[in-house]
Image (cartoon, rainbow, N blue to C red):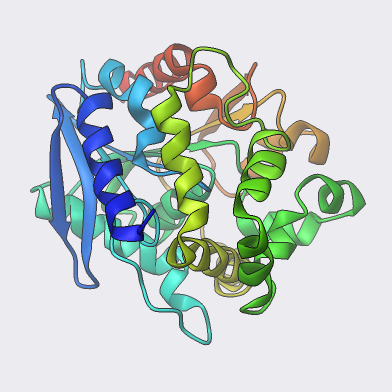
Length: 313
């Protein structure tokens, strides 16, 4: 399917999966961010991960909107948000740049301070936002991640075998893009679904939703953006984290860390919370009985944890 048509179809799907939410195109200095906005109450920004879009929040957003004004956004390069042009230093796809994009998107809605919850790559944008814009982020929830600098510093054979795509997608252009283009649907089926668990929980993934995720791999621009995201992770994002550690910078706001009991983190790290405690003095959390895609596997449980965390403010 032609890329523009696929993005239009995904926008229409968002209208179906987010009843009562309003689709918005939010202006930022670098381009328009696609969002859906619904509910009432204190603002809550929701960010997705690889290789998804804001659609991943479809089953949890309505539960959260009962108490919050929920803003679910596509990250730049994903879904229907603008696509940054690749830069030699990969900073255009770095989490510092993406965090600023989201701060500007929330400001376009009139929200100068807000809570943020991010899964996977969105979690990396979210904690970078809390570090770079502490005056904007009131509370931070990170889902199935540890900080990027910690990932690379602690990488070992177990990590390399389990999350090999971190190094593969970060290889210089155009190697991973060309290899994925050779059989994009095999990459989706064998890596994202069979390897990472997308779609494994019966009844949680409408066929149209999986089709939207699948179509991204037939779009060369989307695949390039994913690779640039991981190249940034291996370079500028890692350097930004290391600079923060050297300077003794902390995440000032309260932090909730949730991770997948059937995902990679329990295999890679003996104590996920202990890693986060070196970054945030006020952190708590637990494992959720789910695959890496815990928001879609366990939307009610994830939403309940987020609501309890936000209610404690």
